[in-house]
Image (cartoon, rainbow, N blue to C red):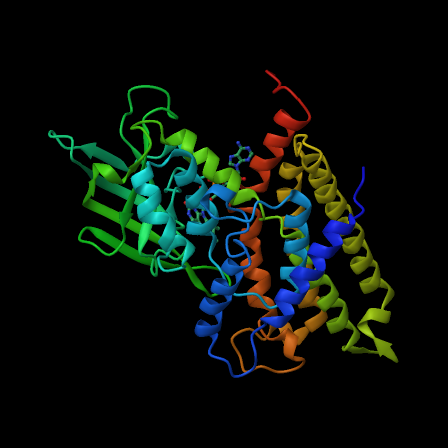
Length: 389
Ligand SMILES: Cc1cc2nc3c(=O)[nH]c(=O)nc-3n(C[C@H](O)[C@H](O)[C@H](O)COP(=O)(O)OP(=O)(O)OC[C@H]3O[C@@H](n4cnc5c(N)ncnc54)[C@H](O)[C@@H]3O)c2cc1C
Protein backbone atom coordinates (compact mmCIF):
# COMPACT_ATOMS: atom_id res chain seq x y z
CA UNK A 1 0.00 0.00 0.00
CA UNK A 2 1.45 3.38 -1.00
CA UNK A 3 -0.25 6.24 0.80
CA UNK A 4 2.59 8.79 0.64
CA UNK A 5 1.56 11.93 -1.17
CA UNK A 6 3.35 12.53 -4.48
CA UNK A 7 4.96 15.96 -5.18
CA UNK A 8 1.93 16.77 -7.38
CA UNK A 9 -0.45 15.85 -4.56
CA UNK A 10 1.53 17.97 -2.10
CA UNK A 11 1.34 20.92 -4.52
CA UNK A 12 -2.40 20.35 -4.86
CA UNK A 13 -2.78 20.24 -1.07
CA UNK A 14 -0.98 23.60 -0.76
CA UNK A 15 -3.25 25.08 -3.48
CA UNK A 16 -6.37 23.84 -1.67
CA UNK A 17 -5.20 25.19 1.67
CA UNK A 18 -4.39 28.57 0.11
CA UNK A 19 -7.84 28.73 -1.49
CA UNK A 20 -9.62 27.81 1.74
CA UNK A 21 -7.70 30.21 3.97
CA UNK A 22 -7.83 33.04 1.38
CA UNK A 23 -11.62 32.78 1.08
CA UNK A 24 -12.68 31.95 4.63
CA UNK A 25 -15.73 33.66 6.12
CA UNK A 26 -14.72 36.86 7.89
CA UNK A 27 -16.36 38.07 11.11
CA UNK A 28 -19.24 40.42 10.31
CA UNK A 29 -19.47 39.29 6.66
CA UNK A 30 -22.99 38.49 5.46
CA UNK A 31 -23.04 34.67 5.55
CA UNK A 32 -25.32 34.07 2.58
CA UNK A 33 -23.51 36.53 0.35
CA UNK A 34 -20.17 34.97 1.30
CA UNK A 35 -21.54 31.46 0.74
CA UNK A 36 -22.77 32.14 -2.80
CA UNK A 37 -19.61 34.04 -3.70
CA UNK A 38 -17.50 31.17 -2.31
CA UNK A 39 -19.21 28.75 -4.67
CA UNK A 40 -18.59 31.12 -7.60
CA UNK A 41 -14.89 31.36 -6.73
CA UNK A 42 -14.71 27.58 -6.29
CA UNK A 43 -16.33 27.15 -9.69
CA UNK A 44 -13.75 29.45 -11.29
CA UNK A 45 -10.99 27.23 -9.87
CA UNK A 46 -12.21 24.57 -12.32
CA UNK A 47 -15.26 22.90 -10.86
CA UNK A 48 -14.26 22.95 -7.19
CA UNK A 49 -17.88 23.87 -6.35
CA UNK A 50 -18.94 20.37 -7.50
CA UNK A 51 -15.91 18.24 -6.55
CA UNK A 52 -17.63 14.90 -7.12
CA UNK A 53 -19.23 15.72 -10.47
CA UNK A 54 -17.60 14.24 -13.58
CA UNK A 55 -15.66 16.52 -15.94
CA UNK A 56 -18.35 16.37 -18.65
CA UNK A 57 -20.79 17.96 -16.19
CA UNK A 58 -18.34 20.62 -15.00
CA UNK A 59 -16.53 18.76 -12.19
CA UNK A 60 -12.77 18.96 -11.61
CA UNK A 61 -11.92 15.34 -12.55
CA UNK A 62 -9.81 14.79 -9.45
CA UNK A 63 -8.05 11.57 -8.55
CA UNK A 64 -9.26 9.73 -5.41
CA UNK A 65 -6.21 11.07 -3.55
CA UNK A 66 -7.12 14.65 -4.50
CA UNK A 67 -10.64 14.00 -3.21
CA UNK A 68 -9.16 12.77 0.06
CA UNK A 69 -6.98 15.88 0.36
CA UNK A 70 -10.05 18.06 -0.29
CA UNK A 71 -12.14 16.20 2.31
CA UNK A 72 -9.42 16.58 4.94
CA UNK A 73 -8.79 20.26 4.23
CA UNK A 74 -12.47 21.23 4.10
CA UNK A 75 -13.16 19.39 7.38
CA UNK A 76 -10.63 21.67 9.09
CA UNK A 77 -11.52 24.90 7.27
CA UNK A 78 -14.71 26.91 7.49
CA UNK A 79 -16.45 25.97 4.25
CA UNK A 80 -20.02 26.85 3.31
CA UNK A 81 -22.89 24.75 4.44
CA UNK A 82 -24.22 22.48 1.67
CA UNK A 83 -27.07 20.01 1.44
CA UNK A 84 -26.44 16.61 -0.16
CA UNK A 85 -29.89 15.87 -1.60
CA UNK A 86 -29.63 17.65 -4.96
CA UNK A 87 -25.89 17.92 -5.31
CA UNK A 88 -24.59 14.51 -4.33
CA UNK A 89 -27.65 12.28 -4.44
CA UNK A 90 -30.02 13.28 -7.25
CA UNK A 91 -27.43 14.84 -9.59
CA UNK A 92 -25.53 11.57 -10.25
CA UNK A 93 -28.84 9.80 -10.97
CA UNK A 94 -29.80 12.49 -13.49
CA UNK A 95 -26.34 12.29 -15.06
CA UNK A 96 -26.59 8.51 -15.42
CA UNK A 97 -30.27 7.93 -16.13
CA UNK A 98 -31.98 11.28 -16.77
CA UNK A 99 -32.84 12.57 -20.25
CA UNK A 100 -30.78 15.39 -21.75
CA UNK A 101 -33.79 17.66 -21.25
CA UNK A 102 -33.91 16.75 -17.53
CA UNK A 103 -30.17 17.30 -17.15
CA UNK A 104 -30.44 20.76 -18.71
CA UNK A 105 -33.53 21.59 -16.68
CA UNK A 106 -32.39 20.49 -13.20
CA UNK A 107 -28.59 20.35 -12.96
CA UNK A 108 -27.81 24.10 -13.31
CA UNK A 109 -30.13 25.05 -10.43
CA UNK A 110 -28.70 22.25 -8.29
CA UNK A 111 -25.20 23.51 -9.02
CA UNK A 112 -26.15 27.12 -8.21
CA UNK A 113 -27.70 26.00 -4.89
CA UNK A 114 -30.98 27.62 -5.99
CA UNK A 115 -33.37 24.71 -5.45
CA UNK A 116 -33.67 22.56 -2.32
CA UNK A 117 -34.49 18.89 -2.84
CA UNK A 118 -35.73 16.25 -0.42
CA UNK A 119 -35.68 12.46 -0.60
CA UNK A 120 -39.00 10.60 -0.66
CA UNK A 121 -37.90 7.00 -0.13
CA UNK A 122 -38.96 5.70 3.33
CA UNK A 123 -42.56 4.99 4.24
CA UNK A 124 -44.29 3.61 7.30
CA UNK A 125 -43.59 -0.09 6.64
CA UNK A 126 -40.78 0.50 4.12
CA UNK A 127 -37.42 1.51 5.64
CA UNK A 128 -34.80 -1.23 5.65
CA UNK A 129 -37.18 -3.15 3.42
CA UNK A 130 -37.49 -0.20 1.06
CA UNK A 131 -38.81 -2.22 -1.87
CA UNK A 132 -42.00 -2.73 0.14
CA UNK A 133 -43.06 0.85 -0.60
CA UNK A 134 -46.74 1.47 -1.35
CA UNK A 135 -47.08 5.11 -2.46
CA UNK A 136 -49.03 4.65 -5.67
CA UNK A 137 -48.56 6.48 -8.97
CA UNK A 138 -51.19 5.80 -11.62
CA UNK A 139 -50.60 6.84 -15.23
CA UNK A 140 -53.47 8.72 -16.89
CA UNK A 141 -55.28 7.07 -19.83
CA UNK A 142 -53.67 9.48 -22.28
CA UNK A 143 -50.22 8.73 -20.77
CA UNK A 144 -49.41 12.38 -19.99
CA UNK A 145 -49.38 12.45 -16.17
CA UNK A 146 -49.25 10.34 -12.99
CA UNK A 147 -51.59 10.71 -10.02
CA UNK A 148 -49.70 10.08 -6.77
CA UNK A 149 -51.29 8.95 -3.47
CA UNK A 150 -49.53 7.75 -0.32
CA UNK A 151 -47.35 8.67 2.63
CA UNK A 152 -43.61 9.15 3.07
CA UNK A 153 -41.90 9.37 6.46
CA UNK A 154 -38.62 10.70 7.90
CA UNK A 155 -38.38 13.06 4.94
CA UNK A 156 -35.50 15.33 5.93
CA UNK A 157 -36.16 19.05 5.33
CA UNK A 158 -39.38 18.40 3.39
CA UNK A 159 -40.70 21.57 5.05
CA UNK A 160 -38.14 23.75 3.25
CA UNK A 161 -37.73 21.69 0.08
CA UNK A 162 -38.81 23.05 -3.30
CA UNK A 163 -38.80 19.64 -5.01
CA UNK A 164 -38.85 15.97 -4.06
CA UNK A 165 -37.36 12.90 -5.76
CA UNK A 166 -39.83 10.20 -4.95
CA UNK A 167 -40.09 6.43 -5.27
CA UNK A 168 -43.58 5.31 -6.26
CA UNK A 169 -45.31 2.00 -6.89
CA UNK A 170 -46.55 1.73 -10.48
CA UNK A 171 -46.96 -2.02 -10.68
CA UNK A 172 -47.53 -4.59 -7.94
CA UNK A 173 -48.02 -7.68 -10.05
CA UNK A 174 -44.45 -8.99 -9.88
CA UNK A 175 -41.41 -8.94 -7.56
CA UNK A 176 -41.35 -6.01 -5.07
CA UNK A 177 -38.27 -4.50 -6.73
CA UNK A 178 -40.02 -4.43 -10.09
CA UNK A 179 -42.79 -1.89 -10.55
CA UNK A 180 -41.14 1.09 -8.82
CA UNK A 181 -40.98 4.41 -10.67
CA UNK A 182 -38.71 7.38 -9.87
CA UNK A 183 -40.59 10.70 -10.09
CA UNK A 184 -39.62 14.35 -9.54
CA UNK A 185 -42.18 16.96 -8.51
CA UNK A 186 -42.51 20.32 -6.75
CA UNK A 187 -43.37 20.27 -3.05
CA UNK A 188 -45.42 23.49 -3.06
CA UNK A 189 -48.57 22.27 -4.77
CA UNK A 190 -52.11 21.15 -4.06
CA UNK A 191 -52.40 17.70 -2.45
CA UNK A 192 -49.11 17.75 -0.50
CA UNK A 193 -49.26 18.00 3.28
CA UNK A 194 -46.06 18.15 5.35
CA UNK A 195 -46.30 17.30 9.05
CA UNK A 196 -43.30 17.91 11.33
CA UNK A 197 -41.74 15.14 13.42
CA UNK A 198 -39.71 16.43 16.37
CA UNK A 199 -36.84 14.05 17.05
CA UNK A 200 -35.10 13.05 20.29
CA UNK A 201 -32.67 16.00 20.13
CA UNK A 202 -35.59 18.46 20.01
CA UNK A 203 -34.97 19.44 16.39
CA UNK A 204 -37.39 19.67 13.50
CA UNK A 205 -35.52 18.20 10.56
CA UNK A 206 -37.72 15.25 9.57
CA UNK A 207 -41.34 15.09 8.48
CA UNK A 208 -44.23 12.94 7.44
CA UNK A 209 -45.48 13.81 3.95
CA UNK A 210 -48.94 12.91 2.63
CA UNK A 211 -49.78 12.93 -1.08
CA UNK A 212 -53.42 13.18 -2.16
CA UNK A 213 -54.06 13.07 -5.93
CA UNK A 214 -50.82 14.89 -6.73
CA UNK A 215 -50.44 15.32 -10.49
CA UNK A 216 -46.99 14.71 -11.95
CA UNK A 217 -46.31 15.23 -15.69
CA UNK A 218 -44.82 12.15 -17.34
CA UNK A 219 -41.75 14.15 -18.43
CA UNK A 220 -40.80 14.30 -14.71
CA UNK A 221 -40.21 10.56 -14.64
CA UNK A 222 -36.52 9.63 -14.50
CA UNK A 223 -35.66 6.77 -16.85
CA UNK A 224 -38.14 4.06 -17.66
CA UNK A 225 -41.40 3.29 -15.86
CA UNK A 226 -41.13 0.42 -13.32
CA UNK A 227 -37.29 0.54 -13.40
CA UNK A 228 -36.87 3.01 -10.52
CA UNK A 229 -35.30 0.44 -8.18
CA UNK A 230 -32.08 0.44 -10.23
CA UNK A 231 -31.85 4.24 -10.08
CA UNK A 232 -32.80 4.25 -6.36
CA UNK A 233 -29.99 1.85 -5.48
CA UNK A 234 -27.46 3.94 -7.42
CA UNK A 235 -28.55 6.97 -5.43
CA UNK A 236 -28.21 5.09 -2.13
CA UNK A 237 -24.57 4.29 -2.94
CA UNK A 238 -23.91 7.99 -3.38
CA UNK A 239 -25.79 8.72 -0.13
CA UNK A 240 -23.64 6.28 1.83
CA UNK A 241 -20.41 7.67 0.41
CA UNK A 242 -19.25 10.30 2.84
CA UNK A 243 -21.58 9.31 5.69
CA UNK A 244 -18.54 7.79 7.43
CA UNK A 245 -17.25 11.34 7.96
CA UNK A 246 -13.72 10.22 8.92
CA UNK A 247 -12.13 13.62 8.21
CA UNK A 248 -14.79 15.42 10.24
CA UNK A 249 -14.28 12.97 13.12
CA UNK A 250 -10.53 13.61 13.16
CA UNK A 251 -11.24 17.33 13.61
CA UNK A 252 -13.97 16.66 16.21
CA UNK A 253 -11.71 14.40 18.26
CA UNK A 254 -9.00 17.06 18.42
CA UNK A 255 -11.64 19.53 19.60
CA UNK A 256 -12.86 17.06 22.23
CA UNK A 257 -9.31 16.70 23.59
CA UNK A 258 -9.00 20.51 23.87
CA UNK A 259 -12.37 20.70 25.63
CA UNK A 260 -11.46 17.94 28.09
CA UNK A 261 -8.16 19.68 28.80
CA UNK A 262 -10.13 22.79 29.86
CA UNK A 263 -12.20 20.89 32.44
CA UNK A 264 -10.64 21.00 35.94
CA UNK A 265 -10.46 17.59 37.60
CA UNK A 266 -8.66 17.31 40.97
CA UNK A 267 -5.26 18.91 40.60
CA UNK A 268 -5.26 18.56 36.86
CA UNK A 269 -7.77 18.38 34.00
CA UNK A 270 -10.12 15.75 32.66
CA UNK A 271 -7.47 14.83 30.10
CA UNK A 272 -5.23 13.74 33.00
CA UNK A 273 -7.92 11.37 34.26
CA UNK A 274 -6.72 7.84 33.34
CA UNK A 275 -10.23 6.47 32.77
CA UNK A 276 -11.15 9.32 30.40
CA UNK A 277 -7.77 9.16 28.66
CA UNK A 278 -8.27 5.44 28.03
CA UNK A 279 -11.60 6.09 26.30
CA UNK A 280 -10.09 8.84 24.15
CA UNK A 281 -7.14 6.60 23.27
CA UNK A 282 -9.43 3.73 22.28
CA UNK A 283 -11.43 6.09 20.09
CA UNK A 284 -8.29 7.52 18.54
CA UNK A 285 -7.01 4.03 17.68
CA UNK A 286 -10.33 3.07 16.04
CA UNK A 287 -10.39 6.36 14.16
CA UNK A 288 -6.85 5.82 12.93
CA UNK A 289 -7.81 2.32 11.77
CA UNK A 290 -10.82 3.75 9.94
CA UNK A 291 -8.63 6.42 8.34
CA UNK A 292 -6.20 3.77 7.12
CA UNK A 293 -9.09 1.73 5.78
CA UNK A 294 -10.21 4.81 3.87
CA UNK A 295 -6.69 5.44 2.60
CA UNK A 296 -6.31 1.80 1.55
CA UNK A 297 -9.52 2.00 -0.40
CA UNK A 298 -8.31 5.24 -2.04
CA UNK A 299 -4.91 3.77 -2.84
CA UNK A 300 -6.59 0.81 -4.56
CA UNK A 301 -8.89 3.12 -6.53
CA UNK A 302 -6.02 5.41 -7.53
CA UNK A 303 -4.12 2.40 -8.89
CA UNK A 304 -7.05 1.69 -11.21
CA UNK A 305 -8.42 -1.09 -8.99
CA UNK A 306 -11.73 -1.55 -7.32
CA UNK A 307 -12.15 0.59 -4.13
CA UNK A 308 -13.08 -2.73 -2.53
CA UNK A 309 -15.46 -3.70 0.22
CA UNK A 310 -13.94 -1.20 2.70
CA UNK A 311 -16.63 1.37 1.87
CA UNK A 312 -19.36 -0.76 3.54
CA UNK A 313 -17.24 -1.17 6.65
CA UNK A 314 -16.47 2.55 6.65
CA UNK A 315 -20.14 3.58 6.91
CA UNK A 316 -20.64 1.25 9.86
CA UNK A 317 -17.46 2.15 11.75
CA UNK A 318 -17.50 5.84 10.81
CA UNK A 319 -21.00 6.48 12.17
CA UNK A 320 -20.24 4.56 15.38
CA UNK A 321 -17.11 6.69 15.88
CA UNK A 322 -19.17 9.89 15.42
CA UNK A 323 -21.57 8.68 18.11
CA UNK A 324 -18.73 7.89 20.51
CA UNK A 325 -17.31 11.39 20.09
CA UNK A 326 -20.73 12.87 20.92
CA UNK A 327 -20.96 10.62 23.99
CA UNK A 328 -17.53 11.67 25.28
CA UNK A 329 -18.41 15.34 24.68
CA UNK A 330 -21.39 14.91 27.02
CA UNK A 331 -19.15 13.13 29.51
CA UNK A 332 -16.65 15.98 29.38
CA UNK A 333 -19.43 18.54 29.89
CA UNK A 334 -20.71 16.57 32.90
CA UNK A 335 -23.80 17.96 34.61
CA UNK A 336 -23.58 21.10 32.45
CA UNK A 337 -24.12 19.07 29.29
CA UNK A 338 -27.20 17.52 30.86
CA UNK A 339 -28.74 20.98 31.38
CA UNK A 340 -30.46 20.71 28.05
CA UNK A 341 -32.98 23.42 27.21
CA UNK A 342 -32.01 25.45 30.29
CA UNK A 343 -29.92 28.62 30.32
CA UNK A 344 -26.32 27.78 29.32
CA UNK A 345 -24.15 27.12 32.35
CA UNK A 346 -20.64 25.76 32.72
CA UNK A 347 -18.15 25.51 29.84
CA UNK A 348 -19.34 26.83 26.46
CA UNK A 349 -18.92 23.51 24.68
CA UNK A 350 -21.30 21.80 27.12
CA UNK A 351 -24.24 23.80 25.74
CA UNK A 352 -25.89 21.69 23.08
CA UNK A 353 -23.85 18.62 24.08
CA UNK A 354 -26.90 16.59 25.01
CA UNK A 355 -28.89 17.68 21.94
CA UNK A 356 -25.94 16.66 19.74
CA UNK A 357 -25.64 13.33 21.52
CA UNK A 358 -29.35 12.55 21.14
CA UNK A 359 -29.37 13.62 17.49
CA UNK A 360 -26.36 11.36 16.84
CA UNK A 361 -28.44 8.26 17.60
CA UNK A 362 -29.82 8.62 14.07
CA UNK A 363 -26.39 8.30 12.39
CA UNK A 364 -26.51 4.51 12.57
CA UNK A 365 -30.08 4.44 11.25
CA UNK A 366 -30.28 6.69 8.20
CA UNK A 367 -28.59 5.79 4.95
CA UNK A 368 -29.04 2.11 5.89
CA UNK A 369 -29.19 0.96 9.52
CA UNK A 370 -26.10 -0.69 11.04
CA UNK A 371 -27.74 -4.10 11.25
CA UNK A 372 -28.47 -3.91 7.54
CA UNK A 373 -24.86 -2.83 6.84
CA UNK A 374 -23.65 -5.84 8.82
CA UNK A 375 -25.84 -8.07 6.68
CA UNK A 376 -24.31 -6.55 3.54
CA UNK A 377 -20.78 -7.02 4.90
CA UNK A 378 -21.51 -10.62 5.92
CA UNK A 379 -22.97 -11.53 2.53
CA UNK A 380 -21.00 -9.42 0.06
CA UNK A 381 -17.69 -8.87 1.85
CA UNK A 382 -17.16 -11.99 3.92
CA UNK A 383 -19.17 -14.25 1.62
CA UNK A 384 -21.08 -15.81 4.52
CA UNK A 385 -24.12 -17.68 3.31
CA UNK A 386 -27.34 -17.50 5.28
CA UNK A 387 -27.94 -20.59 7.39
CA UNK A 388 -31.09 -22.54 6.56
CA UNK A 389 -31.46 -23.65 10.14
C1 LIG B 1 -32.87 11.46 11.20
C2 LIG B 1 -33.35 10.63 10.06
C3 LIG B 1 -33.42 11.19 8.80
C4 LIG B 1 -33.92 10.45 7.73
N1 LIG B 1 -34.05 11.06 6.49
C5 LIG B 1 -34.65 10.39 5.49
C6 LIG B 1 -34.95 11.05 4.25
O1 LIG B 1 -34.64 12.23 4.05
N2 LIG B 1 -35.59 10.34 3.30
C7 LIG B 1 -35.94 9.04 3.44
O2 LIG B 1 -36.51 8.47 2.53
N3 LIG B 1 -35.69 8.38 4.61
C8 LIG B 1 -35.05 9.02 5.63
N4 LIG B 1 -34.81 8.39 6.83
C9 LIG B 1 -35.28 7.01 7.00
C10 LIG B 1 -34.20 5.95 7.14
O3 LIG B 1 -33.62 5.65 5.91
C11 LIG B 1 -34.87 4.73 7.80
O4 LIG B 1 -35.22 5.09 9.11
C12 LIG B 1 -33.95 3.53 7.83
O5 LIG B 1 -33.76 3.01 6.54
C13 LIG B 1 -34.53 2.41 8.75
O6 LIG B 1 -35.84 2.12 8.40
P1 LIG B 1 -37.03 2.09 9.48
O7 LIG B 1 -36.96 3.36 10.26
O8 LIG B 1 -38.28 1.79 8.76
O9 LIG B 1 -36.64 0.92 10.46
P2 LIG B 1 -36.86 -0.64 10.21
O10 LIG B 1 -36.46 -0.98 8.83
O11 LIG B 1 -38.24 -0.99 10.65
O12 LIG B 1 -35.83 -1.24 11.21
C14 LIG B 1 -36.06 -1.34 12.62
C15 LIG B 1 -34.88 -2.08 13.22
O13 LIG B 1 -34.81 -3.40 12.67
C16 LIG B 1 -33.54 -3.63 12.11
N5 LIG B 1 -33.63 -4.47 10.91
C17 LIG B 1 -34.42 -4.25 9.85
N6 LIG B 1 -34.20 -5.20 8.90
C18 LIG B 1 -33.23 -6.00 9.39
C19 LIG B 1 -32.54 -7.13 8.87
N7 LIG B 1 -32.83 -7.63 7.67
N8 LIG B 1 -31.60 -7.71 9.64
C20 LIG B 1 -31.30 -7.23 10.88
N9 LIG B 1 -31.92 -6.15 11.42
C21 LIG B 1 -32.86 -5.53 10.67
C22 LIG B 1 -33.00 -2.26 11.76
O14 LIG B 1 -31.60 -2.23 11.68
C23 LIG B 1 -33.53 -1.42 12.90
O15 LIG B 1 -32.69 -1.54 14.02
C24 LIG B 1 -34.30 9.10 7.91
C25 LIG B 1 -34.19 8.52 9.18
C26 LIG B 1 -33.74 9.27 10.24
C27 LIG B 1 -33.66 8.62 11.60
